[in-house]
Figure 1 (cartoon, rainbow, N blue to C red):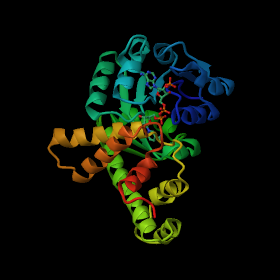
Figure 2 (tube, rainbow, N blue to C red):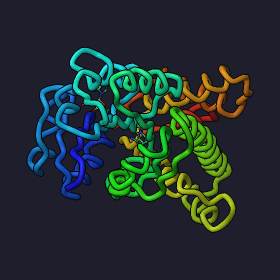
Figure 3 (cartoon, helix red, strand yellow):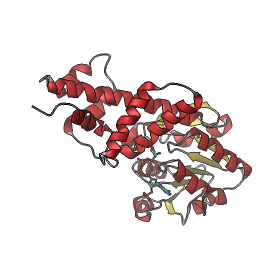
Figure 4 (cartoon, rainbow, N blue to C red):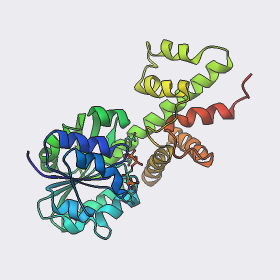
Amino acid sequence: MGERIGFIGLGIMGRPMAMHLVEAGYEVTVWNRTQAKAAPLVDAGARRAASPKDAAARSEITITMVADTPDVRQVILGPDGVIEGVRSGSIVVDMSTIAPVATREIAAALADRGAAMLDAPVSGGEKGAIDGTLSIMVGGDAKTFERVLPVFQKLGKNIVHLGGHGAGQVTKACNQLVLSLTILGVAEAFALASRAGVDPAKVRSALLGGFAQSRVLELHGQRMLDRNFEPGFRTRLYHKDMGIVTEAGRALGVPLLGAGLAAQLYQVAMSHGFGELDYSVLARVVSEMGPAAR
Ligand code: NAP
């Protein structure tokens, strides 16, 4: 079916995303640094690549879904990287969340080899990846976007082309900014309710019917109540995203007071050793800053 797809990075997000493409009938070639994680995909019919270079050489569209900016640089520009395998006319789609400036540099390097690039970070979390309902925020050339759109439609529902290279990553930074302050608001509301002797679970139910309603209150609020901080979205990745947000504000001269506060609270979470826990662990950081439980 259609174009051949390379998929690099089979973590919490990448694995279910690649699986959707296999199930949709695409010829998919996968690569993951820790090879064992590729096994379920190979069992489902994907081919196993020897390197990112190999995955790109066997594909018209190569998707990367790794952790951070240096990791994307590594798998695309590093030794045995995607750039060594791409052919003229092929497309590289980076769906990781990374710095917009780095995206533009990588796009320029790929353009020198005749390959196009899209930045296409996502929102919707592990659940969105499993359900195929991600929001996908795309930057890059419009014609390239149109060519990849059928692939995006297997992964997500709200797919928006926002402009040139980096526009998707800027939009994702805006997403993380809003999300961090919403999470903080829910965490503080629950801490206040608990201290006042009102059941936070009932507060959540009440708030879900009014203007304070949100998916964060619904999903992360429930995690906070259950004290279930299994990832989900790892705190160390969220900490990385808040660095992207605050750095973008600094570079552009835009004061981001709320984002700065949330970024510092994620720094506290990291200092407490919560990096591998879900980012809703901010509830624990907030409650531990307050008075001891009565
Ligand atoms: P994850 O579970 O930690 O997986 C990260 C993946 O990247 C793994 O496959 C890992 O390989 C690979 N990787 C990391 N560094 C690498 C390197 N230097 N070279 C090669 N491979 C490398 O992370 P995730 O939750 O799937 O997140 C992936 C991206 O999506 C991140 O940019 C994140 O910010 C973004 N995102 C995540 C969520 C979420 O809810 N989880 C939501 C939206 C966006 P190994 O298996 O070998 O470690």
